[in-house]
Image 1 (cartoon, rainbow, N blue to C red):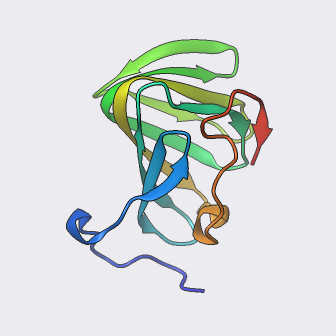
Image 2: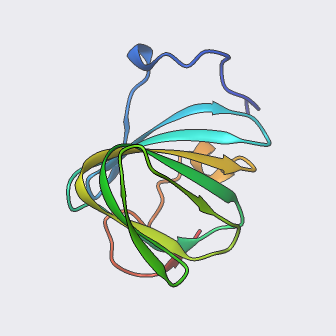
Length: 128
């Protein structure tokens, strides 16, 4: 398996991977230590609460989302960001069609093997 992305990730040559539930993604730069993912949400799409051992930082590039991180809930809009420590339960509901840029450390191996996360478009807790 290839252990890193190309140096340059040009949007014009990349295709959205449809995950279901109104959610699609593109994997951008990654290696063993880090991964950046662009995720497109339709209005009403849900990233059900879940947890993973990766550190996550998310930038809201467009739209509006209601994020739950631990026991805190906040509306995030374009230009805002969030930090999610490892193993903390979190999720989001898309209030206005939008785009999130997620950065994970270490790399999300499950994204590289073609697995589609079970936590999109569902309203239940899930670990991944």
